[in-house]
Image 1 (cartoon, rainbow, N blue to C red):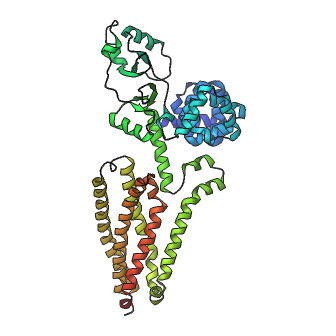
Image 2: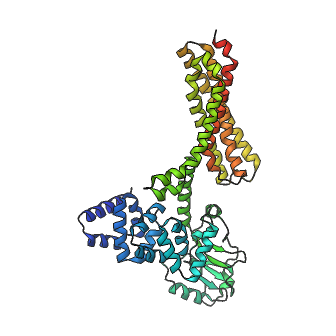
Image 3: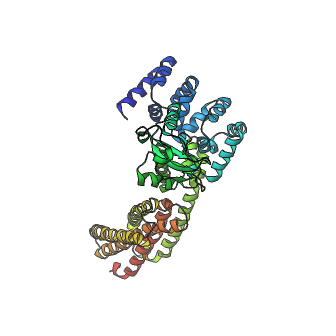
Length: 456
């Protein structure tokens, strides 16, 4: 936490404790919206809702801007804290894409009232955004941009700049024809250097980098990363200018994607954030993957039962089962995360050879780790149980379990990708369960093969 945010947090907390609402109002009026949104991360739920209510009553426009920068869980928290009428009035002040991002998680009565009060055009846009889904660029498009006709002069364009009253930094002016089709762009800096009587169409840049309204957020992130731009225009298939996407919205999307990936790696869902106080709902969201893991572990239990002769003949074999499962699981998770990351950012999707190289690399790493850990654990097992044959068995079994775990971890994300599923799903319970089944099977097969030597 930066010193500025620390001071802001303590000042707001003290003012609330003293019920000094005038001071809170004064602080909020002088503080940048970004700092207000940031300090909300370090306040309690009660403090956040009180402060936001004060901000909304004193400066609704600023409240809207702050709200757009908040984490999703805090947004829903605030909506639920407002009276129904206030929450509906507030939501109607938000841009339609922002409404689309929260409407499925707000109380049903508020949702119904919002939809009923939306104007015809806004209602259609909301329906379109919801049908397209949250993963499309349409959900983060902004109408805060300046466009001029290609038949305008430099003087006309500068006059439009002077009349521009949006609260956002103006960097580019987009050029459209009479049908609102994007035909060019000119930076504000360049515009100011040309004689006032020149035509915009004669000085604009025609080689445009654009996003399509049907593009996914992942594709938008890749475009911003590749071209290092502050803003990109959004067009439809006919080239009509529909809006723009700013880098700050892309950064928010990247943060959301990271959170989403962490949840998937844990076999959970990001929706849990919206149900922090609903235990049954959270349990319901987590159950599917845990049930899959349970079925997998039942299979593991059945496999172990098939080797009851080996276990009954030399019970010490069981001592190392948890180690086999744990080490194989860790290796599998590491390989799966590396592979899933490569598939998500596009590095391994264009060329199968690149992916096979990654699999081969993970196998080499697994072989190296398997040799080291196998020898280390084998020696310790030999000394502990006073049976060098058992040490050899443990070493061999661990080696093959680790190698197969690395192979599984690097292949499962690719299989998920080919099935058009998110590769990140393979980094959680799925790969761990498969690794348990195969790792323990290998260990017990090796032990059974050497059983006669163990009894010597």
